[in-house]
Amino acid sequence: MRCPSCGNLESKVVDSRPSEDGTAIRRRRECLDCGRRFTTYERLGENPLIVIKADGSSEAYDRQKLMRGLLIACGKRPVSPEQIASLVDSIETELRNASCNEIRSKELGDMVLVRLAKLDDVAYVRFASVYKDFQNVEEFAAALEGLR
Ligand SMILES: [Zn+2]
Image (tube, rainbow, N blue to C red; front, side, top):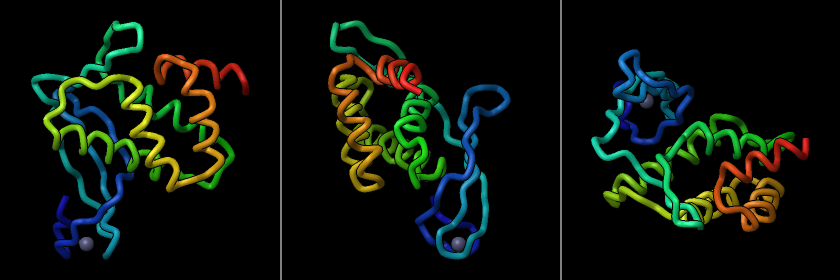
């Protein structure tokens, strides 16, 4: 996303929410160079991303569920919600660029782990140690919520 002020391509997501009609994601971004805040609208694809679980069943990808699991794994760690949103953004961008319409939950988990390793060791270990025993991020999130 190019900054409208200085043209810099690096921005962070400050806030994400569905647009009023639910057909797009409205994102508030902040330029990492000049600090200008701007809004982007990202249309939801005609083919939503499908997550295939280990047992073969599938469900629509849910950004909020993934965010929730990550927020829990990063609990009391020096990782901001903005960093987590950026991590999820980067996964979504990679999948979109690959024109990927479905992904196995394990692959999705691995994509999270690669990025989490760069952010925080403890959050990485939490996510990795619990995630590998579960079929999907939702089960993982539920398990972590139970631990709190
Ligand atoms: Zn800028």
